[in-house]
Length: 310
Image 1 (cartoon, helix red, strand yellow):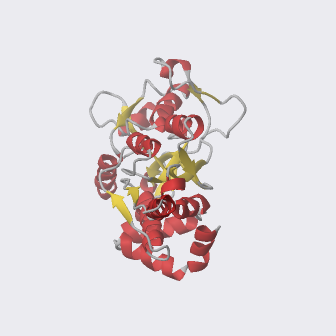
Image 2 (cartoon, rainbow, N blue to C red; image 1 turned 180 degrees about the vertical axis):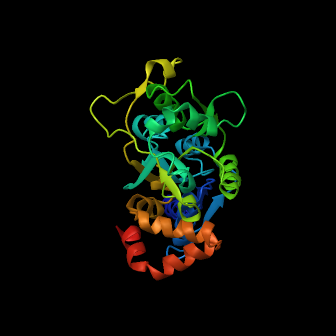
Image 3 (cartoon, one colour; image 1 turned 45 degrees about the vertical axis):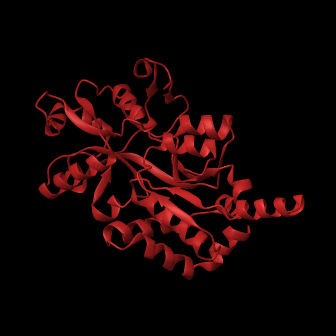
């Protein structure tokens, strides 16, 4: 075989490289992963697999950084929750490429059956209110701050300290999956539960929830140094969170291994209301994610073609 034919064969093979998409444990990410897969195996005529058990974002970013095809796509990068991985792989190494983000919100919530008693962080300063949420009998109320690996988990602990609530409240740091089971049990029993969450997500279709009011964002309301060993002592956060930005990220290696898919991933522009619809159908209506994605792609080829052709 001539050198030119060898080059052509290797190029064709690279462009048909199978795409590996991370499976994350929340419905929005699951929906987006299936949409990406449906586009690749449908109108693009390629191969794509959703890799189970890839729930650790740090491992996903490291794999995209290596560019070896173990995981090529992170379907739901929340910022600033993933700021450490973002700084390392998107900004410094430049081995992860992202699309245009869509907006999400985050805050501290209670079920609506508690909304008459608790409307703001000022209410949490009442010892009687804190006692309602004391699950282990140590005199402090518990709140779910998030998973141990999330940047936001540190931020909520800083907030409670900055609001002067650390003597009345303590963080519960467990996985999202374990928290969801706690929320289900608490909601069914109409018992108190206080927790961090974000939109879009399926729980807002399944439960009536109320977000606590916080001071509006003002200059100097947060000073964060999360990389220091004494991050809790040296950081402050005295206002509401800014809206999150949510991205689809992919390995830069796809620009050589599968440039058509790399182009499509960069062009993805997601409407938050559409994500809510996907999430509701998957979790609230218990519909199959693969079928939802396939049907959406077939019914929205005008949008899909814009992503593919850019």
